[in-house]
Length: 132
Image (cartoon, rainbow, N blue to C red; front, side, top):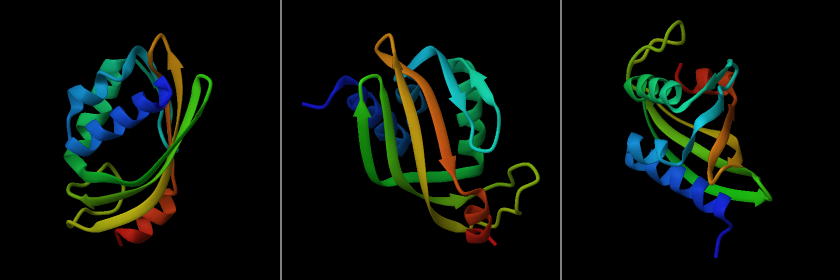
């Protein structure tokens, strides 16, 4: 049987792959700390909802080759992100339906039976090269 944290992380990514925002949010603590790749920190489920809604408008992604690890109340996931760049995202490259597949990782903390922290990392330069 998987530890509680690993089960929550798996449920988080399963909902991500189903494009089930409510399912993904259900894994999060109400005051989740979301550390954005090369960005700031946002607090709370509603901020996460706004972030994910924006991302879903710009990208269609699937998580592949997922490996989940945990120790105590901390966990990590290593995976590949396979996606399509659908719509321009701020001042990033122009979206033309480009496909990409890049390595990424995320780190988590368990708080009150939910994911209390989600910290995502990927190589932005590598993504930009993939969508050129």
